[in-house]
Image (cartoon, rainbow, N blue to C red):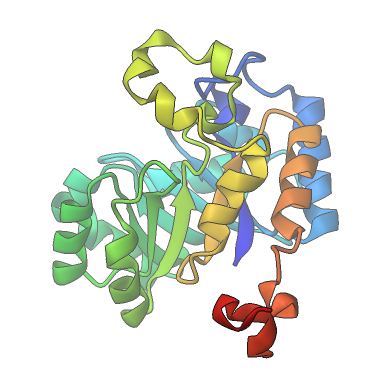
Length: 259
């Protein structure tokens, strides 16, 4: 499992907790350089992310696997021009409901060598199940976080079909990382649940997804290099190894034998 850089914030003021707006160009450069240094070599973008593709096109993307999401009737050539690339690692339909009308186009892109893998970004488990029963997709991007566990039951089946799984929205647009006092009133019904998230909100949210073996990539969006550094540290931090605490001496672990 590895991190994948999400780029919605490069072209949009994206995220409920985003207070800085779009990421400035100089900060994007720092983020891209950090990814290069740390081996984060997969980037997720989309035609719907404002100027994100064009901004990425200013950088040397040689080391990166680029995945973009396209909208209904949009042409892949537009993305290739924006990114200044001749081919992409992946192309996903941005809307799960449009796969019927656009599947033949995705297959054509793949057959022409313009893209290595094709798939879809989904929001509904039922829709995903229907898609995987009728189309041979290579990649799926789905929301997954401690509050949204709807897709977990489908993951084993996806891996059995050799589908790459990208988990997005692991922080729920930053909601899971927000200070309790800053959470909008809209979320009052679930504030008791949010209040139970431990102090290390970042590590807690990351580790929930990190411990799901079927996930191939975790898509994370950031507004600064510092945010990415913090996420990278938390991601690479080893989780507790409880095996060192194991004791076989029943005289120590069976209370009925205690003296």
